[in-house]
Length: 122
Length: 360
Image (cartoon, rainbow over all chains, first blue to last red; front, side, top):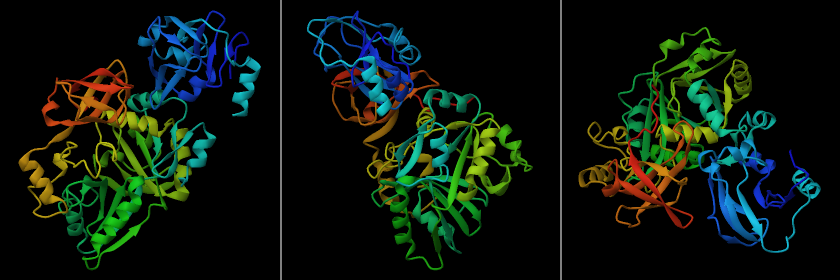
């Protein structure tokens, strides 16, 4: 399972990059199966760490997306409206979901190593 | 949780196991969309051994079944299969099933896994008044493999000396040997494609399965089974049919023989529904800007509530979200614009013609 070393993670299987981009992990996309719809938040929306800000739907499941950090949504990946499968194909790249501008100290994020232990122990 | 003779095979070959109808069944082997496409474009194999099988034998077996179900059994030919709802006195649906006429006085009933116990209780209770009727529940001994898709015929023909062209749609051959395994082979299915269903002894299931997979059939889980049947607008018990949804409301009028049969369980209520007109019926919807799931509320053109999604999914062949919904008849006309409540907001839906998908 791919867990890039330059990202931070949540126990709910989201990743966050240093530029505030957020997506779901390789492990999460694999567990969900084919992603067929992504519900994106409005640009400008404020979120607290742990808030549900969107939804990822596979053929059979509906899963909330939780914000890893507190801040303001400054961009959303509009490409996912037409091509939600990018979440499966490139979860850490073209499959990013939102970009959040942090307004607070980051909370309890997991290091790549800690996240890896979590999914391997699962 | 019960297992089929193939549950261990699924687990060993990437099947994601979930509970369905009391059985541990594969939902997919990695990708529902790819499995769905394999059945539409080539051939897939499904383990549907969770389905229940009952035997009904006796000199008046056909008359008994004519009383029990809404479709007509007495006119069936030997080696014909029949789809039929089975209703209660109020016209509510107890189950929907297939009836196989194995011999003139010998039938096999194939029922939904989740309803095996309920149906068995219902059928045996109604059989009490009938002399010389023998009923048996073989659900735990029989495995069922469904081989479906445009390449199903060719694939199976390569594994048997029997001429499959002689098996017509909704007919069967009681003893066909495929890859050394002998069972009942019917030209039936639940996908909207051509295909066969093969009833074999539980002990033989893996041998037949492995041979068919080795020949190129892709294993398909229940996830794609559901999207395939939804595109073909085939009802699923507990969704489009239930104790509170009659076969008439579900759009299964052709399988309710009010004209041909003067008596069967539920006839009076169903005849009244037909005469007075239905309050609500199941329609097909295209969904815009989201996915409508089972149980979501459907909103009328005037903003009123009163409809409900019975099944909804992304449809891999149509590449859009579709749904079946039980709505007031006033909303049922093709072209009617409706709404669906999704997580507190409303998305657009339109009543469209069904089946959503029909093979060329």
